[in-house]
Image (cartoon, rainbow, N blue to C red; front, top):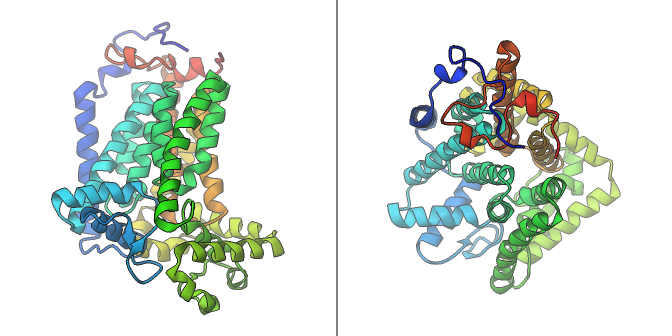
Length: 439
């Protein structure tokens, strides 16, 4: 599809007359995003201290800053080269620590910066898909959405992974498979659950631009991932991917987990005491936990439906208190989480509606497929609120598409191209007119 100016409204009713454009739009989004995140940082979690996952990322980054590589104590209780956490975020945070010092505040500042980058990339992506109104609404939605704001005030990989996800989606829309492969590979090395995302994106590329570009995309990802696997062969003595895989499988599907009916921690649960010494060999420990998780699943395969049911209640906030424990470990303010839940319901319903009314667009189909993939991957394993970030991000884009669709329906105009945005809108002339288009 190419840009079109057919059916442009008269200047008196053109939406670009009243919304901010150009640098004003960028300044607005940056100011709103920064203010929201700094307020949450300073007022909602003033004494934030990274523990659990965030503590491990901070420890890894500190070792990186001191030139020791990806070293941490967990689970061996002694410093060792590790593959438990994906490498990209701790490497970036380690470089940040090296420059600005190893402090929690410095790490939070990096998260705020990456969070603002997500806002700007989302605005750009929304504008490519539905025009300037869609971009503005999508960007503002990410800027003020409390679950994403909370991610951007802690030392977790969510902010960086959303930068990489939004960037990959934008590059896919722009049909740049090699660069999209680079950002997608980095996404996988930041968020292991994104491994299946590469398959979804490759299939979409095959459908839209052909199998050669899909192979280019997968080839770049394979090269990046191979580097990580080779590192693990050299440092850990085995070509493992992420040793957290076994931990997650045992925590969800092992017999102790099924007896408990929910997540169990193999580190602390006494039913895993026979593995305590194996923890000093991260690869063997991961292998043993993987076997226990798979054994439990083989013995009772229908237990997966129970896991999906329990996780769905937390994912869709059907029982909001379900996610409180994980939120505390992630350093979030529980009171803010509860009073902001209406925003979650509103954004989720509106975002899904926006995807539904524009589902005929090939690019919306990509968004829907990616959202469904990340939802399914999380519901089958672990689904604390913070891992919902890809779902939340895509719903914010859906809100932008819904706003553009509503504007077109109300005014009978595309709302797509102002003079400054015409060159950006090469994907489609409008949400409504491109909805049924096919190559």
